[in-house]
Image 1 (cartoon, helix red, strand yellow):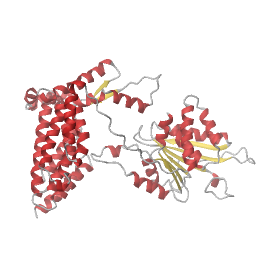
Image 2 (cartoon, helix red, strand yellow):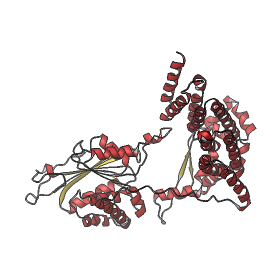
Image 3 (tube, rainbow, N blue to C red):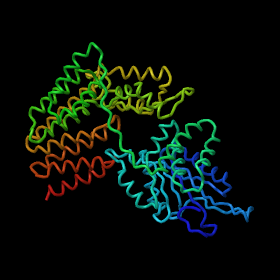
Amino acid sequence: MIVGLPEGSDSTGRIVKICILAVGGQGGGVLCGWITDVAQRAGWHVQSTSVAGVAQRTGATIYYVEMMPADPARPHDRPVFSLSPSPGDVDILIAAELAEAGRAVLRGFVTPERTALIASSHRMLAVSEKIVPGDGRSDAETLTRGAGDAARRLIQFDMEAMARKAGSVISASLLGALAGSGELPFSRADFEATIKTGGRGAEASLAAFALGFDRAAEGAPAETEAAVAPMTATAIPARLAQDWEAAIRRLAALPAPVREIAGPGLRKVVDFLDIAYGADYLSELERLVTADDAGEAFAFSRQAAKYLANAMVYDDIIRVADLKTRPSRSQRVRDEARLTHSQTLATTEYFHPRMEELVGMMPARLGAAIETRPRLMRVLNRVVDRWRRIRTDTVLGFGLLWLLGGQRRWRRALLRHQVETAHRAHWLALAEAEKARDYALGVEVLKCRRLIKGYSDTHSRGQSKFDKVLACLPMLAGRLDAADWVRRLREAALADADGVALDGAIRTIRSFVNE
């Protein structure tokens, strides 16, 4: 008998309806096949269908299974099953990611009187979350609470982490959770027998299945987040050790609230260029701390420690090339692809440089001379402004990016560096001037640096929003709520890529300024 269905139900009442939501790479099709195979081995009638999403990792595929036990008295019956799930008519819903569980709830597939919801608690960000300039992530706590309220029963834990631990994919741990839940009248051995027929990779799948099964069967409490690992020591060549130790001593002399942020900031700045650049970062911070107010818990200097480091570590082609050729990135890609020793990895990097980025890589005088000739810039941009695909699994492709990344040692002489340095100085001077009149406003001006990120078109859009927000300062001069309005403007700028919310907020300010 199926949990939740009354005894003596007719044939349609004994149909078990299972809906699986998974995106490309999560093995949703394999999971659907396993469930179908288990039911067939038990002599049940079963049918599975799938409706594909938009594309791999941008749209979930819906796999749907209907099954019912065969009637020994009617061995030749062939029941007619539905091809797709209907709202309010799903017994078990399996979501391979937390937001997919939330979307299933919104679509009505999960109901409190009927549906057992099995969902992994990990997140795979949707495109709609990634395109938001700020933090566009859906709130995991809200999703979990909503899923628990909507379902008859919620089984949720990080099944992706279990799969990785076992060297498998999440479909195996999801199957384990389904088997361990007791929602289907099949034994653990029945499920394991199906996995064993898979041949290659069956051992890893069985290990992931076991982890999911045990966790669901025991009803163990939610896993606590692992403690943040301490920062590893920075590897410094012996010839630079003395300079690095001097920088660490200067860092230790900063007030505790500032030092907490300045430590990672210093490492980031040094990694971007060199230790002398890190010394420049510390000098700027020391100057700001001296003029700061301890009664405000050094809030201004603390924010400066964060956003000054971000401003000094700007994204350009050299930076991108450097990051893409680091061994740590190659290893991360291999781990994500779950590469085995017998496999090779082919990688293609995508670039879309504009003439502005190439001019920024030139010596300052030469780059400025070209940049002041709009017609020449337009002509050259026709050649440059197009997608580039570089195979970094080849000597030529990797060598090209490696040489580009090595240009960082000459950054100080390049046009982009001088432009960024001048812009950074202007931003800091503006923040300090506002702080002298309104401490909170000065802090908010520092935070506006968050709007500038990336390179190419992304950087241009962020720069435009940054300029728009700070252009409102004269209209807010003297107002007690000026800091609050700058915060609202910044949040509006981070709300969407097109700047519609920011333009609306600016119109609001103009409306009360002109009254």
